[in-house]
Image (cartoon, rainbow, N blue to C red):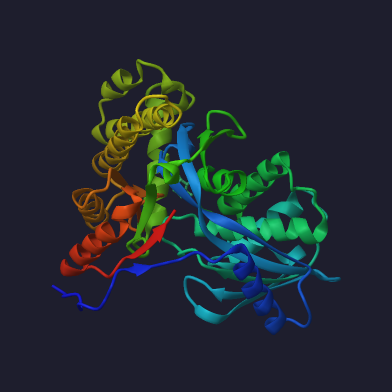
Length: 407
Ligand code: GLA
């Protein structure tokens, strides 16, 4: 067991303001390429409140965005060259991550962070948008690879930069949908990761202070926005970043999405989206194969929890009851992701249990799982105490010190 040094306080990660992020990325651009950028833009991370592993089977999700964002500064070029410099990447911390390519020569299958830049430019070009070469600088205060949609924040910011410098007129609601679809195509076809559309449509269509209910039974997904007024009631979402997801998580994710298709096949349905009605859980319970049954049970019950959470958020009952119920739904979501969907880890379970024991109303893993972040609904004035306790328990059990973010 590793003991925590007494002066080693819990680590907090503060977001940059929009101005600070823009200044940083513009400075990186000027230092890396000659002259000034034409535009600087940004995109946030995605934080699921309830509703993970439902998007690729036509279910429901409720998510918001983080104040922590990825910033991009860019300038058009007269040729087809794409020159990219990143201040940070999963592999490199500190200026020095560089990549160069050419627009006409981009081909699916390239690995690593530059594929998130190249992929969205490739997808926009494939869709017929008149783009050319670009110089691009990237910086971010979003944790990378820990379940907050950092890959999609990067492609979304690069897509917004292409829009800004090439005048693609994507700066509208319809344009955001189009860009989200281009980012999804980039991830699925260019990068080769069979993800759903949760991250793309949240990052590009939801603003801070809103919760986005996305319904994936429609294509493109239908969005309903709700004000996320936790702060007005003295509540906050506290993120516990426990570090990177385990290696090979993408393969485990792909196996889950294939199981979702299999479950629908066995039930004779085009997709599990058909199972939103009352008989849903009964039909799933009748599935013979255990693995298929428990995966399907998560998918169906998680969408129901999303509906219940939205009902509490928009309900008129006493605030205390509604927030207590949302906390309970978050805990039930975590339990389902652990026991039925098997995407949690002992570390995430410990972070959830400790946050709850320390006073959180509810907590759950957020995102794909296999490591990464936990989100807890907490009283704002209890944040310090909860962070202290989670930090102490995780470190005392030999885990790395977590980082805390407030939303
Ligand atoms: C990842 C995927 C999303 C979604 C979540 C889990 O973030 O990219 O499409 O499936 O996992 O909800």
